Image (cartoon, rainbow, N blue to C red):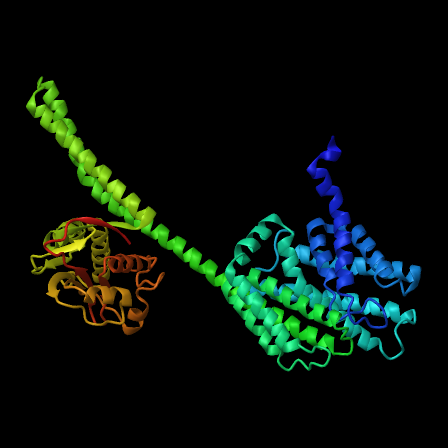
Length: 551
């Protein structure tokens, strides 16, 4: 039967549930009413109605009208009489509905403010909308003689502040609780031990500031910024929404329980609204910074994938070429009728090259998954010569002279694939840099020397410097005849998306430095009128075997 389906209850019971929750909000916040009317310093129930309107549009009008009318009857005893009560409820439904439509058109039905610009839009709509609603509502009460002569301005101020503060403080959290996705994000954000810490701090601050709320002058109100700033800086907008709602609920509860009706609560509520806006601003900035950081990490991963794809293509080129050569040899031997030791030897070589290609793919896959490195002792001269050989065609085509000066005959402990990637990146940058020089003046020089410790250099990371100073290193220098690195560029050269090339993304040097520091080495540039990059590679000890590590 359709009556037993969960969708039936969800569709038909949400309106009665909204009315019941709206009445609960109305009763809980009916504090310090002006002339016994619905004019209180904190009125959060419209925020519940606005969220409901954003979800359902004009279908929310009837249940909201019923909730407003029942609130006047059950909570306040209908002080305006039935006819005026109905008229006031109609206006509030229309007025709040117009605010809801403005929010719905601006933010849609699936999201609220998620940037500082949208936060200001939201505040502007809420402020202007509640003010217009307030003016008509209080004018109707005044025309009916329920507002004493001369107190119209006081009533407008009290009702306007109550609505505005209630919506600003409460609506973000209610909005987050209104959808499954936002509830899950709220749970993931605040469901941690740290949340208990700032909630405990909030309770302590509330007790400190409002220990005797009936006579407090709120001179220590600024202490309430502590838990809000804590929540905003650590948990962003979602943590802030929870924190400001808890603070406002705590203040309202203290006022209600202590029957503190003589204090200037509306002034206190304005301060709380400012506190909420400051917290939301900080929370949005924190969320934006985290999003930028996440996007940057994704860009770095994509750049790393591109760099590693180039490394993969290079490393697989030789075994694939060998496999093709051996395959043709097998074909030739079979045509000759060879089936003995010679054919067997060629097949074994094909198997070996296939295993070599599989090893390359496996190592790169492990690097992407875990950052693992396969450290091995490699002759530094062979390392430099192998990478330099890959550029010979480009060097001849662009009329660039490459000088490889004496590199010490010593072994370095590195992951060959990754260090070759760094060397290729530095040589490619040098090749690009010398293109501005005329033919005959385009030179690149690679040299090396052993050092017992790496001198301090602010241009490279402290981690890499400390690791390099623990053992002897090989300094490899890549020098080019380009225009060099200026002081201003050197300060930002290893930051993401900073590049001196028009077509560069500015990620190659970031990845190269990360690889070097993961090896316990370092990479830095020196300021001068020519390009000069240095990399420090850890030397291999004679007794150290080949082994695997995780970066």
